[in-house]
Length: 340
Ligand code: PHE
Image (cartoon, rainbow, N blue to C red; front, side, top):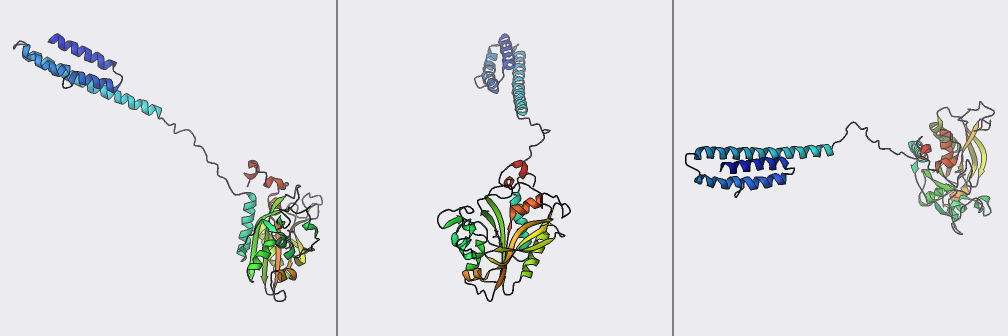
């Protein structure tokens, strides 16, 4: 029996050393210590041992059993530890690698300029209205007192959609739409896209305007001057000079073109390429609303008066940020846009 126990022990030790999986160790445990395991069943053989040798043989059996139990326990533990170590190694994270920065986008410079101008006029009590980009001829031209043969109605200048519809050439038709639906007093600004058949460094086929108008009793040219001077100084700086020049628009009378002192040379350079040495930059069109416009929307042109103005957003942004090509705004070049 002794040699049998030695054989079992030897094989157990060798088997456990060779085991590389928990399942193999478990199989060995069952084979040795399970209900029908070799070390479980060998106990019965003690009966056949000489009674004088029995205590020593029993002690030896216990020794082998205990040793095998401990080795199995140790083998399980060692395999679990190494499995855990492998897992840790494979899941290792280098916490010293610099993180990846998320690039945050921002508003387009034209949107930024529109929002800045809206803020200025809202602070002066104006509200925001919008209208459709595809207009009918009536709202874009006729109601705004354009004569039937006015050159702006020409195919050369206007994108026509069909006989009667076009891409609005200015935001002024929204004056008509608002006045058709509401009664004075009105103080409204209208930001939006506008379209003209035009394409060079300072004219794009699509651009943006902000229209503004006020209608009430006794609105004067002085109100127009005060409002625009204040707004332009908020926009370009408190000491910006503002000048009104007589001009013509079908829908205002009298009409003016408004200039600001050159933002580049402040009138100090006779060779300035921005103002061409004049010291002034044309920035918007304005005037007192023509009585014919009031008649078109059913207002009493005797009792009411108003002013209106329209300013090109790209033009404002180009002067503010000193950009020399209007096409950059719609070019979607991230290197350009990132600078704002
Ligand atoms: N609608 C004119 C334009 O686009 C600008 C303007 C608006 C002029 C309102 C006077 C009053 O040129």
